[in-house]
Image (cartoon, rainbow, N blue to C red; front, side):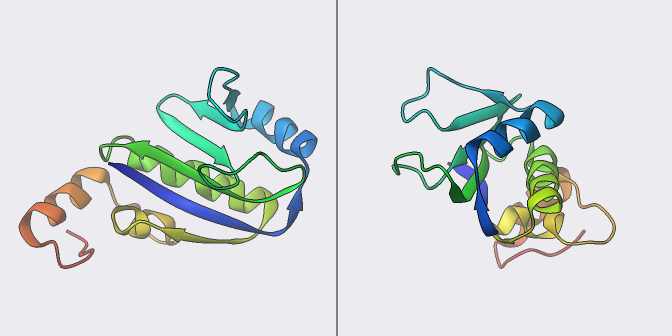
Length: 125
């Protein structure tokens, strides 16, 4: 199971512009991943376009994700950094929504606790 933030940009982003950002942000291209459009920073995965799409140049959306609710703070921080640089909108999975909003940080421990006690949506602990 993955946890993801789906980003849609205000304008199309060229792959060369994206690669410049990746160098600054510490995202590494993964030539071994099928589709040729995936970048990593630790266990955080950034996929250009949607899963299963051919890589477009320029592209207008991407997905920032991790698996098994791991590194949620890093997923949110990566998505926020991308949005700060390029502008746009996002849709976050419920376990990441609180981390994407401005205000005091919400930790993955709080989110996991809330998921265990109530599965009725996000409630800050």
